[in-house]
Image 1: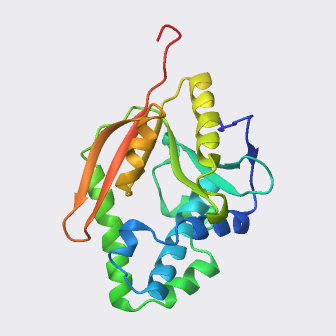
Image 2 (image 1 turned 180 degrees about the vertical axis):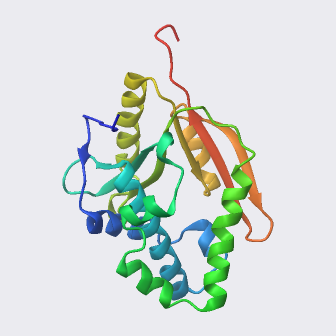
Amino acid sequence: MPIKVEGLTRIKEKEKIFSVLLEAFERYPRVSGVFPDKDRRQLVTEASLRYHASYDMRYGRAYSLDSSCKEVVLLLDSKKLQHSKLRELLAGCNSSRYRSLIHQLTEEEKACRTELFREMEEMQRDLSFPDHFIYIDFLAVRTPYQRQGRGKMLLEEIISYSEKVHLPLMLFTDATEQVHYYQNLGFRAVGITSSKKFKYINTYLVREVHSGND
């Protein structure tokens, strides 16, 4: 059953979504530590965002508060989280723009990027998550509109939807200062992973469905 958050506007235009993500994730914490040079970091960040967001849009949905798309959130049913070469191909993950970005990286940079994301996947295998949940993969707000409560408004609509369909929410953040923000919205930390090599920390948070008696 597709995710349908009625209080939000669905965004289908990929480039509009990529634009918001690239602006909001200009300093992607776990990428910044590995690629300190701004130009090289931007190549890796854009390639990674395009790859993962393409998958999310194909098998999940992207939403904003309205069609102006000053903010965006990508949602995915946990049953669709398992990637495969065929799924990635159908989603357009390896688009011409993605291939062009990867082509501009050195062999060493390509290997480092691959190891960075492979390590992250390996570290989270030991964590325990609900059997079925809605995954919040990206939540981004354009720079001029940050700190205006727009991200919170997105989350409140998503929380209402999760309660309606009786599915918990899960997300992770590599910005430790954001953990308290999510906890104030009812999320609880269920696991923390730390990369000794790449020097970043991921905190995984879940918001359970509340019963009517809570």
